[in-house]
Length: 90
Image 1 (cartoon, one colour):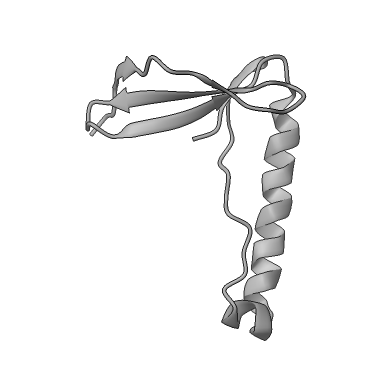
Image 2 (image 1 turned 120 degrees about the vertical axis):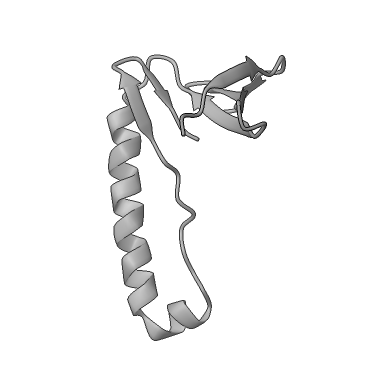
């Protein structure tokens, strides 16, 4: 099954950071609203490297008895690089 874009929500939220990324919401053919973070003129490879680092930290936290008991983790953030100057973070 393929998921297609039905519509873009009218509201765009500008995040409060140096790059001023925009949070947009897309509605799919399944009726679900999918949030995306659009980052203009930014090197998304940095974000991908950060996610690799977070994954390693999560594995270490899971192996540690006390951290595992407390269910400590870094919430995942998936980075998809579409082209050099545009990416999405669902």
